[in-house]
Length: 261
Image (cartoon, rainbow, N blue to C red; front, side, top):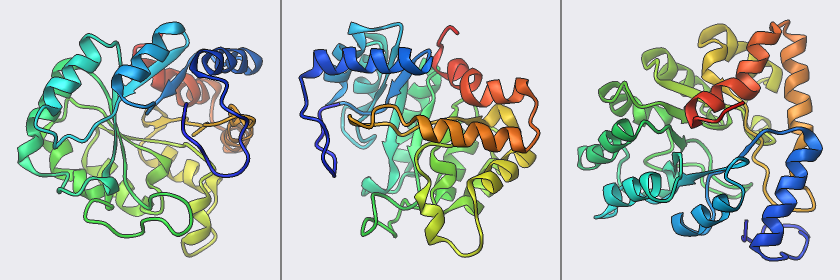
């Protein structure tokens, strides 16, 4: 909430005012709750979420290779009220499948929290296109070893959709989210579209493992309502029943993050 994004964002009015502005934004679009996957550290994000605990859900965010990573994770969930664990795999130098961090996954299982872990290209054009941890299949052995942990791969795999589908085939505890503009589609061969991604994942892993995400960030853009409109339209065009659309755009996230609808 306090980062300086590209472009010309509104001047940051301070965290309190910004939090209130987000509540107004949620009310404007009829959004039950919003998840903040990072926010200036676990303690800071917890404080922000505490101002509107019925509307804001926060994620723990720190590298699993810290010496006290397990303790930070437990503190973040039990004491700070955060409800998930967010990682950017291409920003972690050590191999994500290293058994040295198995205690972190064990703690996630014990706490019953989902792990949102980004694979694929990182950043905007000119960002990271290759890294030891860029391939979603790096999670294969971890997800197999910890079947009780719900892992979520954002952005439909972010240009690694084939590998993400293979991972989902092998590991039923892996889901995907739909977040962002999905502009990475422009950088893969073929005539790939968001609708095609919805159809492919819907026909393979089903609606219970597809989770809407907006990748909303700064103001004046605020909540990326256009992404919601476009994605709902794609699901309707694919003749998905209302029950499945509700799962994708509300129910699945509510289940994983323990949000009452």
